Length: 323
Image (cartoon, rainbow, N blue to C red):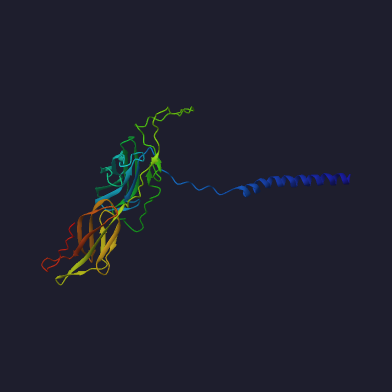
C-alpha cells in the first residue's frame, strides 16, 4: 500500500511539474520570438491630389500685422513637364468655411521650377499672442481637386515669456502629406468617378496607346532661396563710416543678419522668388531699401544703406548699383 501511495504521489508531482512547464513555456517562447516592430515607411504624396508646401511662414512662426510675403510651391504630380497643373493657390487666415479672412490668391510661376509662388498679403491687426491657422488651398486645373495645408501661426508678439507655445506638430494639417511621388501617369482625360474594380483583367487592344508613367520633374533642380548682400554706414563728421554689428532684417520673413567690422553683410536662405524690403538698424537709427527682387540661386547687391543720413552734413547717398 505504501508503495502504491508513493507511486501515486510521484505521478501527481510529475504531472504538476509538466503543467507548470506548459504554463510558463508559451510566455518564454513569446519573449524569445518577439521581434522589434518595423519602422513606418516614409509617406509618399498621392498622385491624384495637388502637392502644396510653404517655405514662409513655417508652423509656429510669430507674424506681425501688416505687409507679409507668403512663399512656397504647389504642383499637380500628374501635370506634364513645363506646367504646374495648378490654376490657383488661395490663402485664408482662419477657417475658410467658418468666415476666415481671405488673404488673396496666386498662380505658381511658369519659370524654370514650374511650381514656385510668392504672394504679398496684408495681415490684419490682432491681440498680441493670438493663435490662428493659416490655410492654403491648391486647386488642380486637371482634376478639379484641391489640397489643403493648414498651419498654426501667432499674430503679434507673445504676450509674455511664459505664454504657451504653439503646438506646431499637432496643429498642422495637410490633406496630401509626404514626399513628392517619383512617377505619376498623366491622364488623357479628367479622371472618372471611382467605382469598385472588376475582378476581370482586360488586355489592351492592339494599336491602343497606353499611358506610361514618366519620371516627375525634380523639384530640386534649382535652389528655392536667394541671397542679399550690401553694406551699412553711418554719417559721422560729414563722411560715411562702416557700421559693424548692425542688424539686418528681410521684412516679411524670419531672415536676419549682422554686419561685419567693415559694415558688409550677406543674408542667405531668403525665400525666392520674391520682392522684399530690407531694413538695417543700429542704435535706434534705421535705413531701408524697398522693392528688392530675389531670384532663386542668385545674389543681389543692394549697395550701401546709410543710417542717420544727413544731407546737410554731406553724406547719405547710398544708392544701389545700377543693373
